[in-house]
Structure formats: structure tokens, C-alpha cells
Image (cartoon, rainbow, N blue to C red; front, side, top):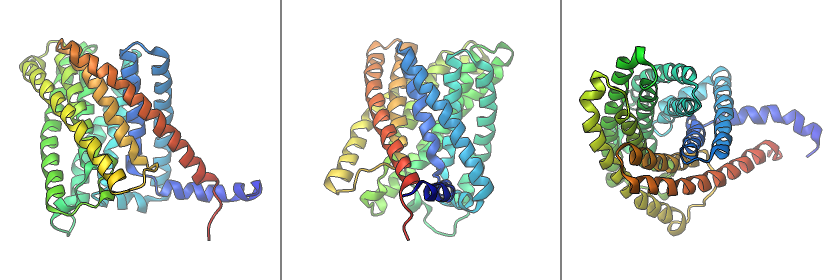
Length: 354
């Protein structure tokens, strides 16, 4: 294809990609940020900074693309809000913002973490009422349970990400300590109940309705990632400084965090088996799709959950499992990042088809 033709067609082609941008693409930010945190916790500073850089760049680019989409393709964004299979992906913005904030806190950039928490909490609060209504409750189709999928667990991840940021700041911001403790425990508790509700609904969808192998897509891994981030949030709450809300709940949260880690561990073979069934038994092609980042984030979050929980509750075997699992997440991140780069590059340069 001549360079002149490519130059003329690229704006329209890029616009088409922006129009079709998936709401859940901030999972790239989540995956890069959480693995960067894990690498930092285990002493791999250079790799951690590299992933942190990717996290920042991805966040800025995706923010810009979503603003472009809102300005130029608002109809597509509105349709996503009405689609139960895509709408909950918007919560990846909340989780991605807080993962970026948590990684910034590791650098001592607490002011940035605080501002990101203000943004994420505000969006979480609004989306927590808007999306269930626009995507589920206002639809004429019934039963709504038939429309559930793995993306519904991202609401849980968003809630727990607020708890992680609040608990992180609680340790260093004495003036706001009581309020941050309340926010951390409140969002953690909401996340636990949302997980129970989402798990029941998604389980009913799987058991009561025919499940095409194509429908059992990567976001189902968020079921494990949501439990893992619940563990991380719980571990951070256990490490909070003394405050009325923290003192009242730390024992309960510490015990439940161990239970949740055990459940997350149990889920991994189930999800791997489902992937084998989908791709090798039912022959669904394994190609790059943006939702693959919904696998990478849970892998990284499980690793960080083990590290945090092991240190907070003095469980060295759990910390060792988390530290080892981190390299599974790093390898998977690298493979998906390469696949994403090739996919985006191909979409930008391939000839137009009539």
C-alpha cells in the first residue's frame, strides 16, 4: 500500500478503532500496574519501573482515546452502557486509576495517589448506580441472569481497588486517618457482598442456560482476580494504623483474607480447565482480543495477594507462592503485550477492504 494512501486512510481507520474501543481496555493499566507492584515488592526495581512506565503511558493514552470516543462516537459509548456484556467493563477505569495510584504510592507520590483516589471514588460511586440500572434493571429482556458474564466481577475489583488506595493512604495521612479507614472498610465490605451477588448470578447463568464455548471468554478469570484483590485490600486494612474503624474490623478482615486467598487458589485449576475445554476441546481459536488483559490482571493480583497476605499475617509459605507465581504473570503479560502490539499494528496498516 503506497504511503500516500496510508496517510489518507489512517485517520478514518484510527477513528473506527476508537469507535469500537472496548470499555474494559483499562485492564491493560491494571495488569501492568499490579505486576509492577509485585516486582517492586520482590526487589526487581528496574523491571518494576519499566512496567510502571507502561502503566502510566497506557493510562494516559486510554484516557485520551476514551475522551475522543465520548466526543466523536458518543452513540457507541451509550450503547456500551446499555449492554450487560460490556457495560461493567467501564469499572476497569476505576480499578486502573487505583492500581496506578497504589504504584505511585510505592514511589512516595502520596499526593498523586490521593487525587487519583478522589477521581476513582467519585466515578465508582456514580457507575455503581448508573451501570446496574442502564445495563440490567432498565432492560425489558427477562430473565436478566441470562445476560450475566465474567465482566460483572469487575465491579467487585473496582470496589476493592478503592479500599486498597484508601488503606494505603491511611498509614501516611494522619489528619484524614479516620475517614480513610472508614472508606477502606466500607468499600472492602461492599466488594465482598458484590462478589457474593455476582458469583450467584454468574453461576446461575452457567447452570441454567446453554454456554457456547465462545461465551466462556477471558473476563471469567476476573472471578479469581476479584477474590485476589479482596485479599490485597484486606491485607492493607490489617496493616493500617489505629483508627476506630480499623481497630473494630482488623481481626475479622485478617481471618477472611486467608479464606479468600484459599478460594482464589482453588479457582485457578478450574479456570485453566475451562480454557483447555474452550480452546483445545471445542477448538475456539486463541487469538488476541483486548479482554485477554482480564486474564493477566488476575494472575498478577494473585501473586501480589500472596506476597501481601504472607507478610501481613506472617504466612511465609503464602508469600513464597505469591513470589513464584509472579513470574507466571510476567510471562503472560509479555506474551499478551506482544500479541497486542502486532494486532494494533496490523489493524493500522492493513489495506482497506471493499
